[in-house]
Length: 501
Image (cartoon, rainbow, N blue to C red; front, side, top):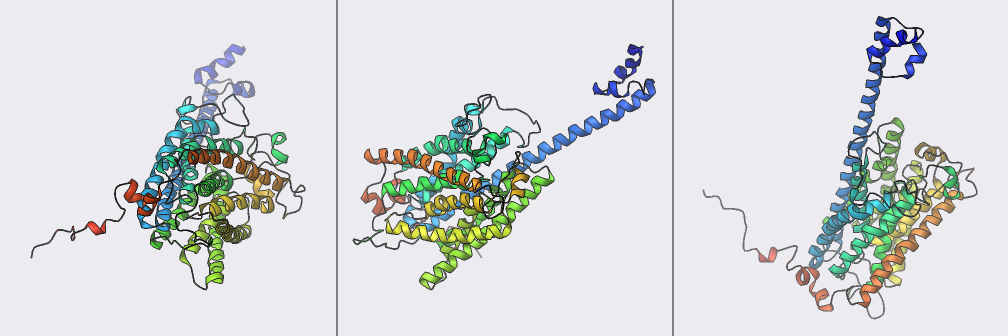
């Protein structure tokens, strides 16, 4: 009797074996079975279509946001070019393009594996799988990140950003071979290991671990889009380079007082700032890594709002502070302040209220100005103020989360619910989140400074770190690149063809 009852179900090709036990007794007529199985098949197909749609949305979201992040490379190129003297423009532009190319190859061969290649090896310190993208998934699987291909592309854009930040700190006197060496070290080793600690689900430091018992202080370090992972790594690398290579010739007089060396194009500085501003909307909102649910869409939108407000507040903060010092309205200072605001909010754009984002930008601007002043007292020459902006304001961005992160927003984003929030709010767990943030800052600082400092000291001892005084006086464009970024002196008239009457 049982076989007779099952026969019409099998003939109808019902996709779900579990349905047999539920309705076998209620439906044994072939016509009834056919109708029920048809409905179940339709539901199963709709579910598959929904999964495919989510995969497509998430993949498109990450590719789009990755492209926006890469636009920031153009912003860095313009910002750096405008902030230095014209005789070194070709050099800084070449370094920016080289950063993208070298970081791409390094991140492909080993960087991504160190960062995210855990596989069956649940190593808390470093990944050890998927070197050269081996064993990558070749098709869509509906994962929240839209698949590993899009994840690699998006994460490479971040790696390229971290790698190019130090260019401004060591501009106008760094040997090109030394620059290439540090680019390889940072993109292949220093940066990926920090990524694994903070962003991989197996990393020992980050808030994204899948079990609460393994979270540092029960919270983990929260760094949403990289105030620590990206900006601290790049900024501290720039600090070590600027300190070890020494200041540019003529930057300080015999008494140690700074001599102004303004950049040659405020126009390029503004263009670079606007491009970076535009790209930051891929940097922060895109760090949701997906967009296929209402919650993720809300987080992305909130990140865009907090990013905007912090950047605006940072620009106003530095503009007013510059006016207080000089009684002039300084365009370049305001551009720096906007970027400082973005760096300061990047760690907590998803968990801070809009008013907290404004505080992050305002205080970030003050910290930036203070660190720049200290650098001049210590005779550390950073033409782009990259270390104060990215290194120290990146630290501040990480620490701000420990003060102002809201538990409701934390639990909205992370899989494991949290008991604690920022110290500003009640039930902060005696500052456990703040403690995790401070530990993160200290560990990242030690890691970056140890590796990059060792490299730069070795290169200096070998006489490979800095160009000669003669080349520095001539400029890197003429001495190392055989030309100039602006060849107006070679023009003998317009290249526009004359139109005969």
